[in-house]
Image 1 (cartoon, rainbow, N blue to C red):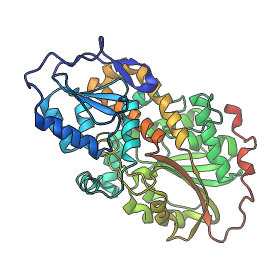
Image 2 (image 1 turned 90 degrees about the vertical axis):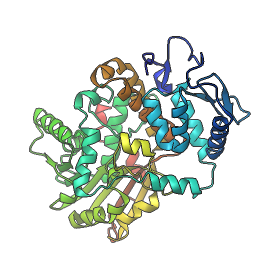
Image 3 (image 1 turned 90 degrees about the horizontal axis):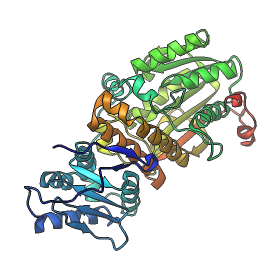
Image 4 (image 1 turned 60 degrees about the vertical axis):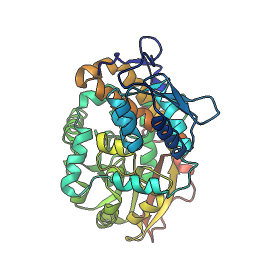
Length: 434
């Protein structure tokens, strides 16, 4: 169907403004809303915990349950979109939104924040949740499929990510020393925060699993005098990282390997993984733990940084299918399958949930500025899908649906560990870039 061109407006709220307010009429060929459609939408709102939202239908009628003023309105443009949404809302909201058959007024973030907060009040383990989890199981992350899954997301093209990430192309949660820090400052602070937790010293050998565009590996080598072997299966990221290492004269200190974490060899003083665990899959955690056990020296340190959840649950199925194939953020309990079989001791757990919400707010604002260029590159449906992904992630971290865990660990008998956390907050070797 023809649809007005979406324009960015108020990026942090992911609002899109059409030429004037959304028009709910005149009536379309679908005809007036019937009793069945109204009943279905009311039941859907009940299943979602009766959030303060309203559906607006093609004939202008509004349906809602909550007495509160609506946080947002979901505009359904045709009867087919309504039926798809009711049949599988977790999947079909994204499908219908990215094709223009559902629109949101005034803010995606407000809508999704209200949905997440309402849903979290529901008792876990409902029949609906069990059924949808069965219908929307994530794809496998076996060695063969893992490369396909990663290619789907990370090989879109470096030019796309360069439009809205920071200068170093860091695509993981930043660390904001103060709320006023810029995204560039906060990403450097995150790299430094990780290095301090690992207690790196000159001459250490570090293995990094899932290195993105190489910012952490290069930071460790440049500021801490360590040698890094960094693994990644995203071809374009590896090519970018190698070129950056060459330009910065760090080729002898950093080796970027196009390989899966299961292919890691050698030994190391420190093992680090930032933003990879979400793609490993819970079924493979013991394998990952075995890799770490095999390569970490007796007095080695490790850190895993991952999006997580408060209790075992699946990632939103639309995001898993359209944005992040195979992704499955773990609970802390599920993460223990990495550490327990190898008898690793967990030394420190930090939750940076609100830091990720702020990171996503920055990304979303930059994405909105880049919308005209992204539209030229990929089309409007792609823009809508990525706007929904970024806005939905921001809302999920703000509402507490998603968490961000940093877990530090070591061998069980290692007593050479910090007495307090004071060392984390002293000036560090890489702070000059903040």
